[in-house]
Image 1 (cartoon, rainbow, N blue to C red):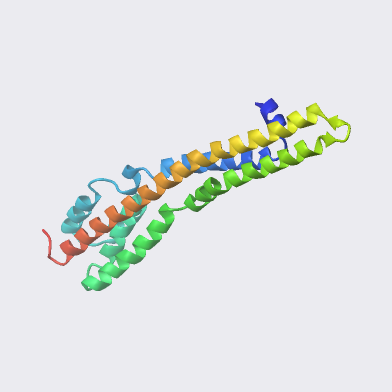
Image 2: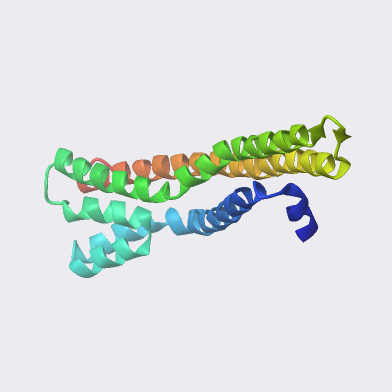
Amino acid sequence: MFAILQAAGWPIWPLLLASIIAVALIIERLVALRRSKVVPPGLLQRTVGEFKKGGVNDKLLEDLERHSPLGRVLAAGLRNAGASRDVMKEAIEESGSAVAHELGRYLTTLGTIASISPLMGLFGTVVGMIEIFGSQSPTGSNPMQLAHGISVALYNTGFGLVIAIPSMIFWRHFRALVDSFVVDMEQQAIKLVEYMHGERK
């Protein structure tokens, strides 16, 4: 592995750093964006059941907010249970925007890595080409310098693509996942509003 890094030259180090960051972000998002953690099944029914038993109280709201992102949205609705439908929906939308922003955390960085990795690889290719042309002299070419230039060019291009492809795949996957969570939370929040205003049993 170290021999490959040596053959790839100094332009490989920014790519290596980008790959470490990308792997760390992918693992963190895989853990954070589990459906059971973001939109736990049965939370709406449990919330409605507890509301029927004891109404809105501080303990219920605190438990919901600590429970999950969906819990935070439902808690925002319950906090305004006595208000009009519009006020309740507005509170839920404000909370939902904050939750959606939090769910999308680090995705911009991952998308940036996916976009710039091929460019960083291309930069390494240019450096390798400069070394190749630098190996030419009136008396002939230096085979060692020529070989090093070729390896710098090819390793950096390949490594840039190896980082970019999985980063792009996971970025798109996480974006779609966050969008589906937001839609799911919106639907459950609407059901809560309808229940509170007697439109749903």
